[in-house]
Length: 438
Image (cartoon, rainbow, N blue to C red; front, side, top):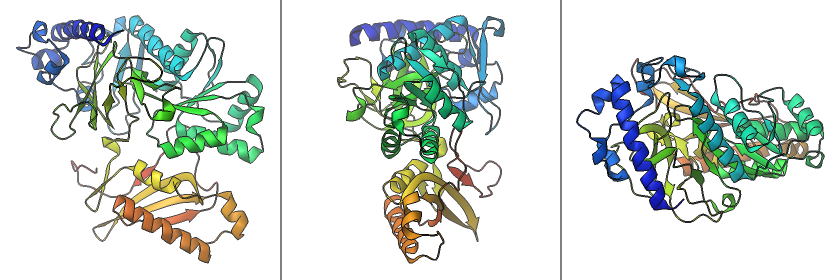
């Protein structure tokens, strides 16, 4: 579709969305008073419209933002609610069909074809990952193995015996699969894997290279969030992944913006900021200018694959994940990038933050590789070489992130392996009620 035709479609769908929200959702009706949908002539007019944030969903729990009665919904999903009330999202039958469509497009971006075997290791249940990938894979004509997460050795048995060409999981779980294969002495040549579709957590280019090298696959990023639809909001194409072209957003369904995280003012194309989405076709719970908390940028330059939709950079970090340590803003992915640049370290780490005598203290727990143990013998902290390695890591971290950290080097296979989203941060600081721990 040409960009002009796409804009015309977006404008029409946006006007209908505002009419529906004004008529059916009291929360939006109040906030949209005085706004005439017919006068919204371009996406530049979006700045006149209010934002929606996650707290709005929690404050209207469970169905206060629905524009359709629950009886018209064929499915409900919900977040885990680890930071408060869960956010509940609903889907009409048409929503489910559109979801399958955008996921099928995403899989096509990755090179999935009818007849391919796809092993889906995203969790099934209230989390949107498992069922979202499942329906899209079936729509494209793939054979789905609904393995869900966990039981890694059994996952490997399925990979060996059922011959999946595509693996879908979080990147941290894919790495867990790779390490387990190595521990079992199973060469990649015994598997038929060629493509990995990974999402649901931020990950770096360094981690992508680790996964690709260890599994002998091409690793691609898929993006989504349950409030907007689930996985399949955007997808990295196989052709553009090597050039850092970003993820294609399906703009006929999701209208993207980038805004300044502090002021909320729209930013120009190419500027980094907070990603904001308006759902153009969602029926059960459409959202207007939803602030995702994800840091990215938009790119309208031509992609080598030929697709014409705007692309977003891989999410660099989440605002919710930002830590403030001794006045310095820090994202876990910044630490990950440093650790994965050190050849003696394995990509298994955790940040532990505590407060001692009113001062924040950061500890970085990270495993060394098997080769370190085999080269230097039995592992213990007193080794001169390990002291040198620890000091080198501390210096690089201080120079890169601007915060001093205590590094604890762990034996291989010491840390618990992820069977879903990796737990990268343990924050033991105690904050007063209402304090923003970020």
